[in-house]
Image (cartoon, rainbow, N blue to C red):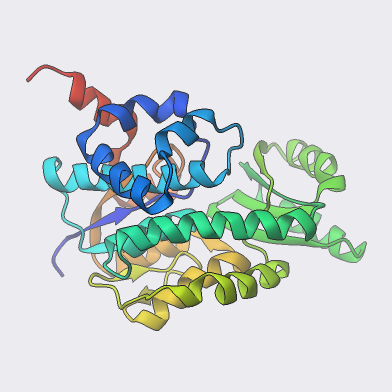
Length: 309
């Protein structure tokens, strides 16, 4: 099997104007994408992003997606990237849907904004007491024992993501967050961040239905032109229905990055371009162990722009 390359659009992490604004202003690939976004949105993305004070505001989500695609543009034009396979864990699905040829870029911009509004409206009244907490370095057998005690006590939880061995995302009632953090610490683990609104849990099936009925019905989703690895279980997506299902699954199914890694390896991928303003997926052991990883982020792009030829 020939060695293949993959482009991976990362899940959304902290990204504000102070961190990526200079890239968005100076990079020609970003400027071209922003111009399209401005027309679609009917407002200046840069202006809204500059003023944003919410990590998951509509404009912040659109900016993250736009930047991820612009960085892939740069990798393809100047970094020698050829994308034989595509993946987009969690929020990265949106950029992946465009890059794989399943959706028009303008439609992805519009859909990203509409889904952001849909989620905000949903979580304003539903599951207001739920958070998703991420953490690393927990012994999985001991952590399973902790989950078993929650089950015995009749307390709800849902694993929202597995990123590597001992690296998980757990959705839980916010009133038990301190208890969870203490349990993680007692096991020798390390708490990372807590997401509000929460993500990727079966109880959010109502959000899935709302998104499907009020947003997805307005968009055409075609079969991908390059294979896509689904972030829920590593399955190969090659049909329009498969793409639509993957995009909807993000609301109520957990992400499984090790399964994505396994799917990429099955496809013969040896080199991975991670295009986006993040520092997570490129750092986990299962990524570094299996691939030659090329990180294409705003900082590296700015260095290329500002370094004299």
